[in-house]
Image 1: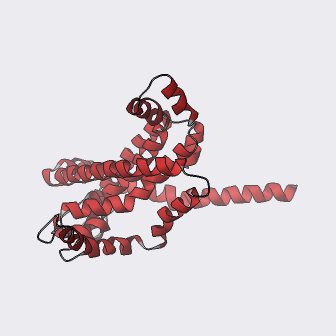
Image 2 (image 1 turned 45 degrees about the horizontal axis):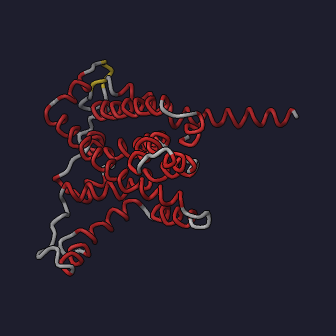
Image 3 (image 1 turned 90 degrees about the vertical axis):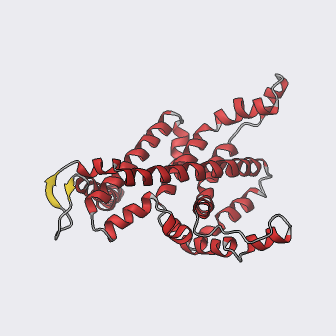
Length: 284
């Protein structure tokens, strides 16, 4: 009995040590670096300042933030419009079919994300499969020039983020009591009324969780604009990477990271207030 108690204390202590070293400590260091000045010979100078945060309001950086937020919101919207019907249909399928659909949804994760982004080039380049298909169908008469455009970045963000929208929606819809739809029909509600007054409100925690998993990460996937957008597309993820590895301005890069952390905290608080304890456990 004593050995079990010691083992539990050791396991919990090891877990807290791991979290402290690889999660809490890096967060504290980033938070500290964000209020320090950048040095010429050192990574930072021990002089506290909020200039790094004020610098975010510079027209150049503010424009990058707005562009990143716009692409993130648009990609999140597309993920929701594509993911909600898929999650709905999957949740209504027989039990033998559901695992198969989820398997095919998770199958791309077996391949490197970067390799999957490069594979999109084969589809959307001027002589790619998409252009050949549309010309064969007679919908266009010349190849599409999507590569190295904002549209290509949007396609890449939706492709990478879509499973993260579907999974929380599916987890929420799978437990849905479908008898509520029959009750709503008996009361005279139409299909749209049932959708927006019954299904959507009950699945709101899954929607919020999906938005959380897509919205902010889409702003920081720096390799997607690098590969698909070229030099024409710069998002917050690229700006953070450039500040750390090229400009060597770690305090400014840390301040941008802290802003994203605060936004994530706000989303988590919103999710906490609009979900039950069971939904929170699913997200964890």
